[in-house]
Image 1 (tube, one colour):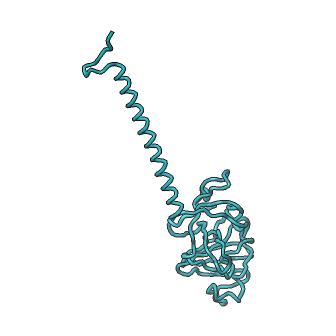
Image 2 (cartoon, rainbow, N blue to C red):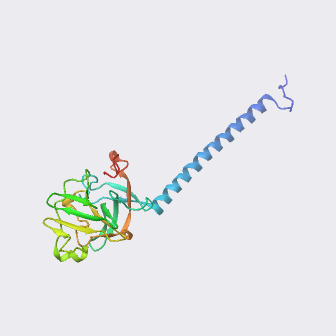
Image 3 (cartoon, rainbow, N blue to C red):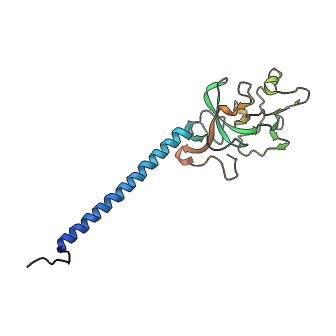
Amino acid sequence: MFAKKDRRGQTEDQQAQQGQEKKQVSSLKDTYDWVHCIIVAIVVCVLVFVLVARVIDVRGSSMLPTLVNGDKIIITELAGGYEYGDIVVLRAENYRPDPLVKRVIGTAGQTLEINFVEGTVSVDGQVLDEPYTFEKTYDSYHIMDPLYYDVYGIDPTEDVGEGWVRVTVPEGHIFVMGDNRNNSSDSRVSTIAFVDTRDVLGKAVFRIYPFYKLGAIYGTGGRSG
């Protein structure tokens, strides 16, 4: 018996073998495409972390209850300008060499009034609703100390009253505070004061640790923490 041939003179076995070879080639191509995609994704992630993002460890309790000691967050320099409610990481080398994590309360040109008796903060005459704070703002630190009026540009005849103080944020600067208001060294401390935006390392966008808190830092209410 002779093997049956098609019009091209190929046997059924030869046709089956060629079909198998084509499947193997297709499978190898699919595998190559997947590997290529994975490699590209890894390279992109590495470039993003190296060039535009970095991981920061939260140290201390100044951002309670939003962030706690040991949290790991991703910050980026490409998230746009800074606005009220943003959580930022900044350098304050006159205070300490390690980066600080704080929340933006006022931006350039805005006037802040802090009432340390009532524990309220106003920006341009509007009292802030601050659900992200651990408690109200009662501790003034240095900002009401006459020794530091020059640091804050405070006019003692107009900008200070019984338990309250008023400051205006200079151009190119921000005013920051921790969410744990009465246990936070921030813009109320003279060695930090108004923060030059050039000293801001980036804006927090994501929490990656602990894993059960993995996700966006800000709540559904916008910059509510």
